[in-house]
Length: 92
Image: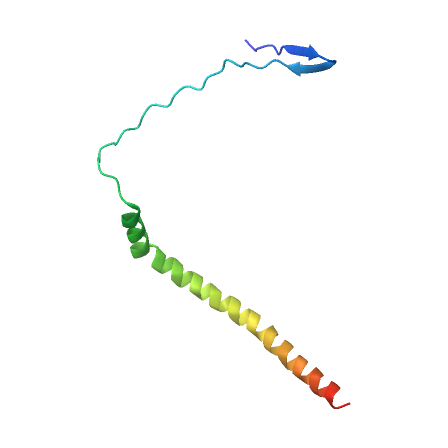
């Protein structure tokens, strides 16, 4: 059965009634599981840098090199154009 919406009318405003007695059910505790010891942050980071970070770093370094080379060419041409502009203005 669908619930019917009930409204409160105060000062000419029609607002839906709300359930103030609602309580969230508590979640069951997970406990420690099968392994009672927890891995430390140092162990987690050591494992990450040992396995995953090397390949990710190499990929990111390659993309960074491509980006630097892409940006370097227009910057070099801009610097050469500014030098040419300064020399032509100084010659006047």
